[in-house]
Length: 258
Image 1 (cartoon, rainbow, N blue to C red):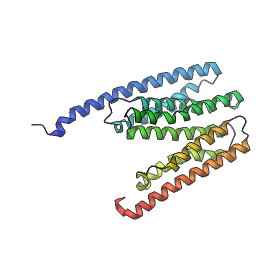
Image 2: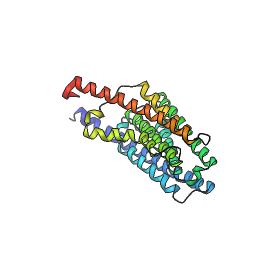
Image 3: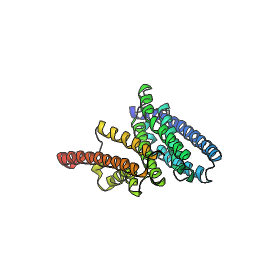
Image 4: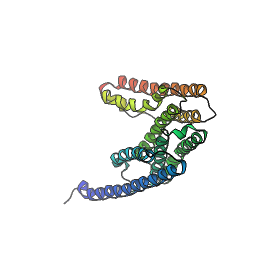
């Protein structure tokens, strides 16, 4: 007689296979839609020949990370509408990343287009989580996908602010901070421990994105942009420092078990 775990394994394998098929189809459609949108933007706005490859490269890296972490979406067997919205946000961020290196983005019309694109990517952040909860599709995978898309958006916005000469290269520190934190966890594993839900963390993330988008506005001069971006960086440093301090206190309290 098969054990309960043996009897459940075929169903688990079938569910995982169904999830992979659905995710593969969704990612492929996302990539094709991105290429079509990027090509249309390139022709309409007279963008450079590298616009489409740059956008596709950013999207491809994100899609590879999505595929790598897909198992955390179990027991769902569909990629889901909420993750589809987050994938659409990833596509917008990829377009924004490609546009940041275009000379036309430095013109008033180009800068406003970048602002609108960034605003759309940021605004949809309030949609995917609500859809996941309403449709009972919320998983650790979806939460991580959403968070990493936000982190990529911040990084891309920092590059855009720098490329448009609104602030010096120091502004890239805001976009690099999340990735530096992840890399530091390899040396100090206690940094990778789960953190409690935090309204402060969410608020700082939203403020950081809003501040960077404001910096991109053509009516905002370099001096004002540097002040705004500097304030955003200070808030981000404070937020990361608060999280690190909490993790350190937790580690000291629990000792080797943490």
